[in-house]
Amino acid sequence: MVRGVHFFGGGPEDSVLVLDWPGPTPGCTPELPLRSPSFPRPASRTALAVCLALLAVPARASALEPGLGDCLPPRSVVALLPLADRTDGVWTAWTGESPAILVERLLADSLVKSQHREVLRLDVPARSHMTMPPARPIDDDVALRSARHSPAEIVVTGSVDAFTHEEQHEPGRMARWGGAPDSRSRVRVSVTLRILDPRDGTVILETTAIRDRSGRSVATVARPEPQDSTLVRALGEVIGDLSRTLGQGLEGRWKARVLSEHGGLCTLDAGAARGVFAGERLDVWRPGIQILDEDLARLGEDVWVGSVVITTVQGRVRARARLADGEVRPGDVLRPCSQATAPSLSLRRQ
Image (cartoon, rainbow, N blue to C red; front, top):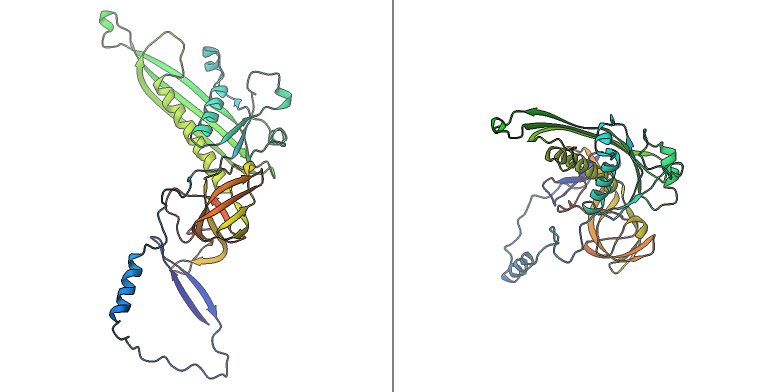
């Protein structure tokens, strides 16, 4: 058995493609031994000039340049159902607003503004006349039925499990002159989200974000407000964690395929319903090529071969794109582009 090894460069880590050859057939005359190595004659001035000219020509761009589209995630649709309020009820009694409603509103704003998603605020038909959030998380089958006819890529349910704001009063520096006492705030925020795939009903992931924070502030007899710096910091961190997790879950599952290609123009099997928009850049990955590292360990079967830019969106399920870098052909897989320079090989271990 003879194993031929081809090295691929293009990133900090080099990988190899291994091809197996069974070797000579038993009983056959083997190939002649290799000759002693010989060194080529010095290149002529003309050949040297041609080589220098080729070196002066920039190779295929590894860093993306202006005009090659926007490296933004698809504007996928997220169906957000009411979050359950599983807190002790103190915040609701003190402020008049359930923390579940506050968290749901802030999460929707974060998904729209920072993740560029479209959010559908859905409700369960049986709760259409209710203003207070449910006491327990909405069941998966109920949530999926509510989003059945929507264009949502994912369905999000969950609960606010803890939302506490406690204050401890201490004598302030100006207490002897009648000044207000100092106050130490202690905040705890815990939110759990459950992300469902509306196509097959599977659970994509379930995640919980928890923050415990404390800080000093000026004591007041007024009711606590979300503008409290300690509460704002804890709540902002929780919302940020959940928003990023949802975005990563969407981008990790999102993919489209190239249906046809001619002259650098291709047709995709994804359109407005998948969040595709004109000017978006997508990475092109080619499946079916086994990639091995220097220790002959299997790394993956997808190779990055280029990128395309969406030119027109043709309805809900089709779009046209032009080649921006590398190459593309029918059957290639398209995924959201990476902000970093795309590697020439997929090094993701499976």
